[in-house]
Length: 304
Ligand code: NAD
Image (cartoon, rainbow, N blue to C red):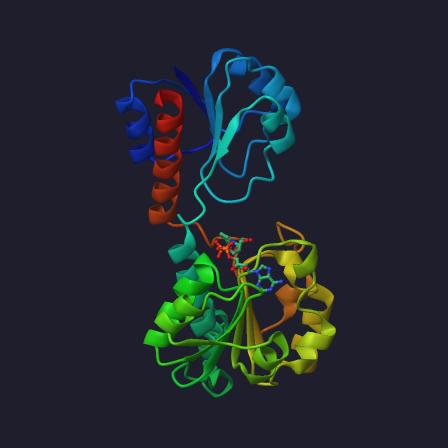
């Protein structure tokens, strides 16, 4: 059995494949032409968000039985072409939930206490003590939109911090909500009552620009918005307006409608927003879990 590892993979995942006795070829992010050359005799391919496994690549791989995506999104794999050939596609949906949740908490604290702003000022030689009045999170209401794997992890941490947790999800899991001391509400109530609103929905038609001008106006003037889901869940133009005109107090963003975020984007000019470059899953632990989970599934499929 031969596995093409086409993206960086944690050493523990490599070990799983080696222990199964598989032959391995490693090449980081080959382009389509190179992939076509590489896949002629492979049984499995492992990728991350790159490279793209197109129909042409799949057609060039007569022995291919499984494609593993170390991570969540499958948009770089031609699922239709894989299905037609009966090729299984496996991923690791829960591997990064805790890491994303911890980044969300980091963004919440950062915006609430103006950490990034203070740091920028310190480097300019400015002691901005007066401008850095913040708020505590204890006792505040956190509104979680999308109570799935990541939303649940955040709710657990938030309730340990003494925050009240409001939840909105079209498929409410009452048992899990009770477990974290959370309460379901409709979207409008959540937006009106929350001091921090955080988004954890998938990007689908019904969540495109879920947070728009009208909904931003429902939020408290003192509220903070966090987006570590997908950029297009928020209407960026409306958000910039909201942050400039004070409809809300601040935002913490890990994802953008356009990635990488263009240099000199209006968001980069605002002091009340903290920006990170889509690093929700970028931890040693998440990458290790994602790699190992995918490697184990590949071993099961090829040996099973
Ligand atoms: P999940 O599938 O476990 O949970 C998503 C939840 O959203 C589900 O409970 C679903 O019922 C709910 N939902 C669907 N439509 C909704 C709507 N219109 N309004 C409210 N809730 C709705 O997914 P997850 O693992 O928690 O991940 C959530 C999202 O986080 C992913 O789709 C992905 O886009 C994003 N993500 C980002 C990073 C990052 O690096 N920043 C990393 C991993 C995942």
